[in-house]
Image 1 (cartoon, helix red, strand yellow):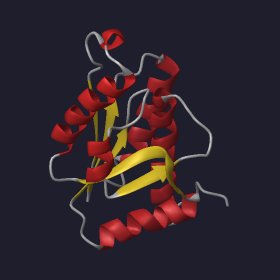
Image 2 (cartoon, helix red, strand yellow):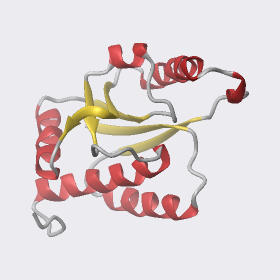
Image 3 (cartoon, one colour):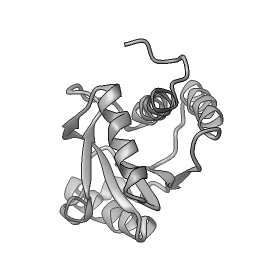
Image 4 (cartoon, rainbow, N blue to C red):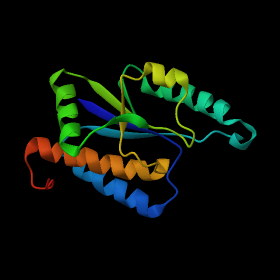
Length: 156
């Protein structure tokens, strides 16, 4: 299984980029993983929230291709780390070739993206910036693979 983390907009915080890079390096031992960035919209300030979601939505759908789509969304299913590991294991056992997790823009996802998604996962009931979600997600992805492989990282 190959995993793609698709993100709307780049990270402009060096400390977040450093953290994400560290976990991506660790993850390469467990799973093929690619990070794709969808550029922020030009003239976004002249667009309404809905127009921004729609425009980002078309870019997301174009980038996802035929991958199974999982949205990182605060309204999604909340998993413990062990439950998230089981979710990934189920995907691997069902021979899911490509699994794409998406971090949306500041206003979330369009209706078309929600309709195309096979799953939605909430990292917390709290709201985080879309930049911070990237770090939290790759850490949880790493934690899930260490749980599945039985390596000493997760203590819970």
